[in-house]
Length: 444
Image (cartoon, rainbow, N blue to C red; front, side, top):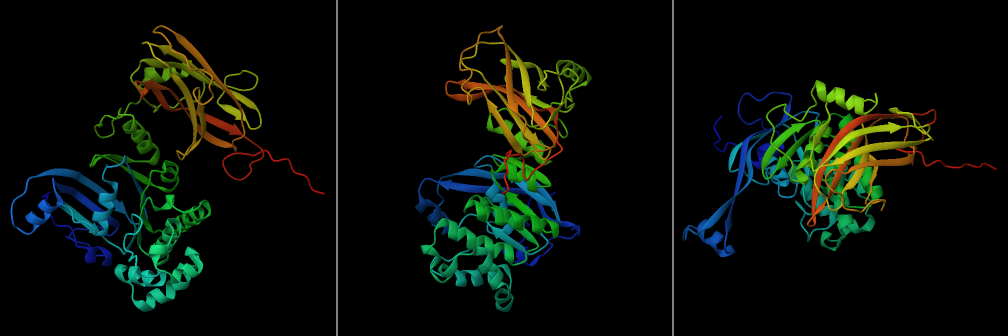
């Protein structure tokens, strides 16, 4: 496909123009072979001179996006994750029409409401009411349509009389309350949110996420960028992973979050399609033997420098019996046997428990617990146990294990096993949320 610039302009994107022929009716957003290159100049005046054609000024090209392809179906909730500078915000701005791509094609089918960085689309001199009308008009609503939605916007924002004051006087919390209230209450077909939910108090965040769930049930299309991996795992049907402007992959939230964690420690290798470190039959037999018949994941992901290797792992109940099922309200122990292959200044042994949606529920390590802070030698074998009370709600969970450390102040992964064991919690009494606070109740 040609990479000539054929992206639609901002007006077309917001009014739901399909763009080129051949668009499928079930596609809300199509990003094809998009590049974004910025020219970086030594001095701001050089940019102005070149823009005015006065002179050719020396500059360097910075590629913010490189041949990115994303397709989002109507009704999907898709997350975009990646480190700072990976191109997440840039791709959102191109989709919403705030930026134009250097090359590539973008098509949007549906009215977009976008909540990008704090302050985008607001006039700081206008008061809250004036900004509501300004934003609604920019999205494509008439004054009458905005007026019909005004009460619901003000009720959601809940900033009182401040709505009649210039927004430049608002706190960041008040600002985002109003911005999100406008974005979420104008009944868009596509909602785009960039990190905005991390601002505001916990009660407002809860209200926003409740609205998210309503949108999902209504079949709206949501594009969601966040560093909050728990929210990404909970709300997204699919996740796209970007790194330094390149799309590394897309897939289930669990797969992409695990890959993102590898990126964070510099141990991600760009895979071929459908390629990952999957255990073969011999690996499965060895792992099953090591786990004493526990429920071992046949598709666990492992990585690390292998200076230390987790060779055995299993769970025991309060009676010391190996099992993958623990009764709620009893003690249980996680066991790890680690072989040290090279001298390590101070290994950290850890476990994490996630639910099946990929949300990290609990976990700890030997550094947090201040239980082991010593160097180890090649040839050493360490047996680590974590014993705790089971107060998670009944259900299925996944156990991940790790051996990490710091070398010359750099965080290093020696061996990690993601979702290595299934942990079943058996319960005849489940309370609200992830865990039971074991309340003692009296009624007089």
